[in-house]
Image 1: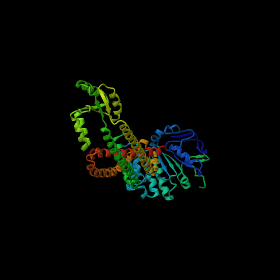
Image 2 (image 1 turned 90 degrees about the vertical axis):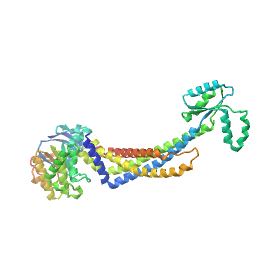
Image 3 (image 1 turned 135 degrees about the vertical axis):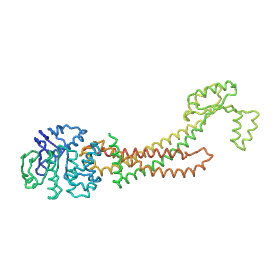
Image 4 (image 1 turned 90 degrees about the horizontal axis):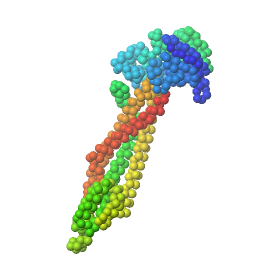
Length: 228
Length: 297
């Protein structure tokens, strides 16, 4: 479960990105985070994986208060969390297999287990046959699938996705969404920031709209609500 | 950390060296160039130092024994001299020997002194060597006050100047080596920093999937180590060959003089060891310092 209480975020340059947010996301939910550019969406997402720390308030995820989490404990926290980015963030010098395996090597998992588990998730995202390729040899959609595979290889309770379809064509975007749906049906919470109107309006889930650093709207099975 | 993980880090660091081909080349070249400089300078310094040592070792105190001293007095003086903590050895040289040496040292003209063989005006002498050449003056001062000591000679005035000169040149050498060492560290860590800046994305991603700083640092640490060691190979080969040749050429020409250069074996092995160590140290230091900057994500 994720819970934000009285969260404010003011950057050193004086910009207030988050201006008092209270929200609760239950285990297994699928939540879209929408809103115009510069509304604080990005900051909201970044605080979820502790790239940013709130200026005040608490963010509790899986029982951990991220606002008070010590720098040293951050890696441990991130191991129970999957993060997917718009620009994939794959290691360019590592193969598909190595990129996914990396998240398990970090936690010093058994080599046998790593092999089995990596192939399992690559199978889930349908990339088993490209395991030995480098990211540069893949299409954008395939790269994003690798990054999703990496985010779930640890079997995290929560996956945070920051505009995962932002760089992809519509057809590929649907493919990616299907994978997220699949992951969600297995019980993983998904928090996804998106600008994709069509997706939000077609695959209905809870929608949290952020405007001017506040929650403007929070609807179960909501609409995108913007003209794009 | 598990042994398996150390193995993983080692593999990772080697892979990264081969994958970052040009960056590896740049870093290794930087190490190579600086270590050649350091190495050559070091070899020269050590040899100059050796020469200085030989000169210093030649310094001795000649204690002229009063003619009035009996055998027993001489013996007690010798014991007294040997008891001085700074003294290494005391050798007795009777006046006959002294005269012979004098005659020999003057060559043809010395023959004139042969007349004195019947009535030798010289003193018997104790030749005193100190453990540390720089203690010469101190010991000489002490010995002057002993009974039955006629004169104490050690090249007064000249020796002081010589020691001053040697000390100054040693200090200059040390300053040079330290300066060169830091220049090397600066140059190399800069090159390594550039290679790591190129990979800061990689480090950020590692942090994002939950790698601890230690985990991220290890492969870089090892990579720096390999780069440093790789970079020291060429300097070692070049300096070994050059020194071998130089020793072959210069060695025989110095025969008979008091100057000697250090023998190839074991000197060049010591130099090689130092160069490898320096390479490794510089490589590791450079990469660890550079990675540190990017670990605060």
